[in-house]
Amino acid sequence: MARYINVEYFSSLDGAHPRQRELAILSIADMIGLQVPDIEGDINEEAILVTAALDEKNPVSIISALFLGRENARSVRDSISTEVWEAINNFYLFVAQYPVDAYKTRGLSDFTNSVIQHCSNVRGRIQHTLLHDLGWLFIQLGYEVESATQIVRVMISKLNNIEEIKKLNGPMKYQQWDVLLDCLEAKDMCTKYYTSLPNRQNTIEFLLFNPDFPRSVVSRLNHILSYLKRIDVNDKHHQKSIDFKVGKIVAPYLYLEVHEIDENLMLFLDELLSNIYSISDLIVEEYFKS
Image (cartoon, rainbow, N blue to C red):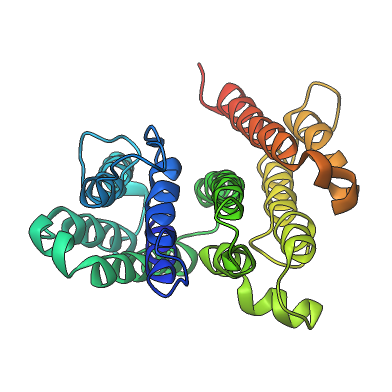
């Protein structure tokens, strides 16, 4: 979320159209599940940005996610390293103590960039200071499911944004493929892979179906299957096993091409998101319900 806010907001400041900043704020509101106001209506930029990051009453704000993450880490404190706990705790304290007034006026860049760095620090500590045992596998499994979900949600939000931009009849829509890739830290590798500027075709293909790019949806789904097989190493592959059920959901996406989905892309993304939620439900049912 921090990267999305950062890229979406600051890219809009360089936009050629005066309405681009408003559209960026609406896109951020859409990402956090706020009711998106009509483009002709008043947009409370400050309220939307604060709600996305520092509103404890918003269950999908950055601070709410961190609070739950820290509580989860506290509940398994004896099973994680001191380095992981300190990274998570320091991350939470940084966000919880960040002055709201400073965030509203001059701190958006500092706050979002610091959150991005804290996220990288936590991921690194998890990777390098924990035993790669069953507990670690479940952490990775949760991370892959959440990442796949966020990729699709970002794509849905940006595609809605692009449709609104088209109504303004300006050149901004071409810039938005750059913005979408940048939100997902994919712009440089997409440009390198296709040796051309981003466009609708190669951006969608790269983010959804490239198995060699770790932030693509297909890559995330492949990792989910891999971790499930490592968790259930002694479980035989049969129709009632979780890796069979999840594999059945994942398999069709491994062989799709963009031209097969492009005409009904939004419907496809909605169904993909629903299937990722179904995978999450299967994991919860298999491992976390008594």
